[in-house]
Image 1 (cartoon, helix red, strand yellow):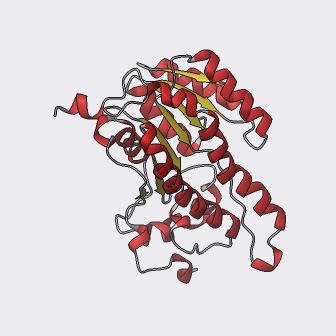
Image 2 (cartoon, rainbow, N blue to C red):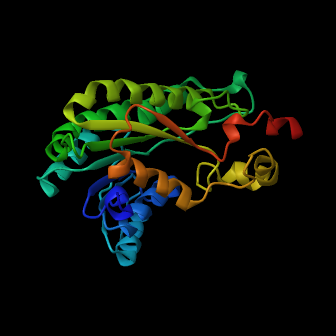
Length: 269
């Protein structure tokens, strides 16, 4: 029952999609800093390589970059083959973090193409990559120490968002339910599947919104602050460690309580 046994991820093999920036980088940093061997992937090769170098220098774990455009199924399949070649003994944790958003000023101007792009990347590829990596996850999975899949959803998949982002909100709600479906199907194979639903964090996706509305948003979060890298990293470490081994099929908000706030920050604009 000691803390090192309960929450250690040392020497675990972890894959983080979108791991070179934003929330993905927060997650990757937490794993590397605690001794895991981490593979990060996204379509921006230069950004990815830079992040991998800096994380490896931080240690004590290691970080390797594998560029991949997850919108493209064939490239996602290539990623799975590369991981199988590099980690023939299997992987312990898959973090499905890659995602995109799309907002407009009103519903009338919202493009149909937004749904195609966001549902493909935010939902379909979560399923595709999980499916493709099942053989590697099963190699590391046991009843005492399950392999883990952690999907990154959003509080906008749990509530109606105040901004006009219907495809994003719908995709994240789908991620949450897909998490439950996968958990029900993969538990017997000793693989747990859970989701985190982040609130406001400093990331590329949130930058414009936070730049223009930071104080208003913070004033309507019960804890009165934006999420920190430690908040997101710790949540993932819990789900990936012995401490989270009996948690399966849940969606955990990491949002400072904003989802239970009865105030709408848009009413102040």
